[in-house]
Image 1: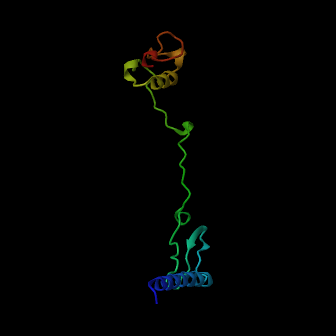
Image 2: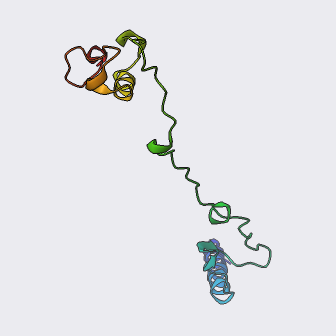
Image 3: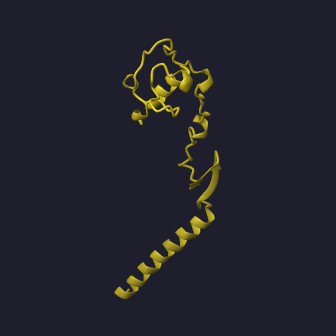
Length: 130
């Protein structure tokens, strides 16, 4: 047998092995399948040695509705009780204008500005705190 014939026989053997392998793959039904596992599509190759692992838990299994705690309505908040019988406060006693305004209104507003928190009488207490 010539060297070229041996080479040709070797190529034919390789070709037969490739064709045989392709043929067995087509007929073995081991092509990838799509399966639906708990609403998740997975690509799995079916094989007797390898089985798909089940999904242990999902986000939906651990989900719980958030709880909402509404803030206390303003009408239910305890108002600070200010001393309104004598001149007890100055604008310097308050950190913010809103607190001074609260005391001013609680003690009578413009009709009874006992603490003199509204110097110009326009109904706005401690304007310097703005």
